[in-house]
Length: 175
Image (cartoon, rainbow, N blue to C red; front, side):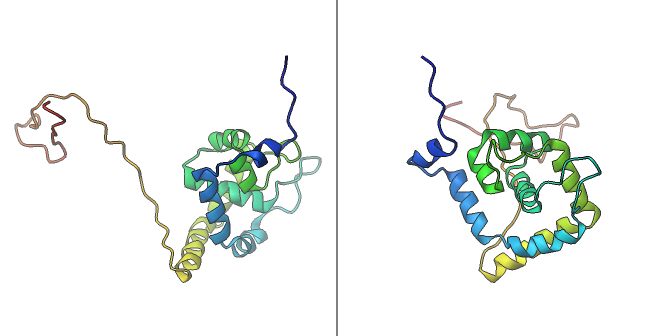
């Protein structure tokens, strides 16, 4: 017997656990100065689509998708796919599946290019940092490195016979 379709959002409203992603997005929603950032971008954002074309996506939705891309290191196609997959990210972006359009990868690319063309990426980062600094919060970018131990020859010498400064060895257990 096929399952009865659920009312949109009902299943999500009934879940008992708040995920780390949902908690992070709720915190960011509270601390990012959305109104100030929207005011910076609004003069450069199109008010209407091309004649006969679709109207532009809401500016706040596009800005929130841009932040999601940066926080989760998403490419344009992955950002589009993630908006379809993740209820938490759709909710953060202000998109209701079935009611609102989800920006496609080209729309996301065009928004990023608009920000770059007008030098707004640096301005946005500086504005957010200044706003967070006023509240005693620091924002930095970083990289997570996976430190998997692999089998390799025990020699730490390079072709010239000298010790390679970037290479080292470790011991796990007795190997």
